[in-house]
Amino acid sequence: MSLIVHPIDYRYGTPEMKRIWSEDSKIKRMVRVEFCLLKALSEFGYFSMNSKDVKKRMLMVTPDEVRRIEDEIKHDIMALVKAITSKLDEDTARWVHFGATSNDIIDTATATQLRDALKVLECKIRRLLKLLIHKAEEYKGVVCLGRTHGQPALPTTYGFRFALWASEVARHYQRLKEIRERLIVGQMSGAVGTQASFGEKGMEIEKRVMELLNLKPAVISSQIIPRDIYCEYLEFLANLSTTLEKIATNFRILQRAEVGEVMERFGKKQVGSSTMPHKRNPIDSENICGLARVVRGFVEPQHQSSILWEERDLTNSSAERITLVESSVLVDHILTKMIKVVESLSLDMEAIKRNLEQQKQLNLSEAVMIELTKRGVGRQSAHEILRESAMKAYERKLSLFEALKDNEEVKKYISSDELKELLKAENYLGTAKKRVEIVVQSIRELLS
Image 1 (cartoon, rainbow, N blue to C red):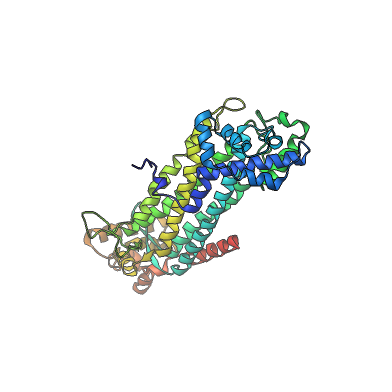
Image 2 (cartoon, rainbow, N blue to C red):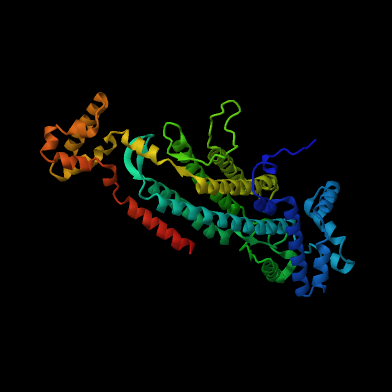
């Protein structure tokens, strides 16, 4: 019987992100950190070693071996140290983990995981941005009904919607680049951060270890790297997932039968319901929304993990084994889902036109009000004229043109032909097309 419990193990996540955060990957990365410490110590004259041979021997350490030792001694890093030393000659083995504390190894290995995770996320955000601006350009002339409070509002375009979403995702792309320098840091600072075990060469040894790992050293740390940087990472993931949920929520609303303007791809053999054969549910968008809520839930535990006693306690450890791993895997999952959704999304042009025409021009009341004001009517008076006419149209099931054409106050300022032009949705889009073009160009420059 399988004892697999967590859906990440069998339902959510991509292979590329899971490989980064797997337990086997973590152990191999920690072995790499221990090797770089040995190499730095040898370079600083503590002892001499054949780097190539030592590296080869250390790579023989297996995750299963480390786990077996940990089961016995109940300490993960000492289990790692014992596994490593068993592969080396006595003269080299006695320098393994010299001067280091457990979190020098753990936090530095985590930095390499975060570095690789950001690379994966960056690549996918770039891909999503390219899709969004492509849709923005493709649909910048597709006029549709705007809605506020879930009710009919002024016309907008689908291109404008996609440009708006793209601009938000673009800011996340910028945030990713901004946090990278603060986030990707390691340490070799000893038990309380003072590097006493390394003496005066402490900072030089730390710098060299980080160079070998292509990392930067933390400016200062205690027994662990300050957790505000992990909080920033979790906040970034939560913010990104919230935007993805926002976009997915709108796709779901726009796919509702009574709206019917948008449709997720539905496979030939795909089943929508176990009892209602006709169903075509937006399950990918729903999946994104559900998992985004889980990701935001990790922010608070990570903040709590920053509040540690003096130089360090262990309350962060158990939480971070979950928060960093699961948030990274889940955000990558929903980002991948969003790329799939946007790539295959289709618009129903007939439904878009029908929904606009069903408003009988009532959603263009502002256009007439603005024109009346320009031609001499007080703005508040114009507002009242249009409000009364709109209510009349609702009650009598008239179009706004029908409700206004015989209004004496309106006829003083606007002719029947002018009124018809004012009540065409495509004539009241303001700077929508121009703004789409500006957003598309700015994102192209950002990605270049």
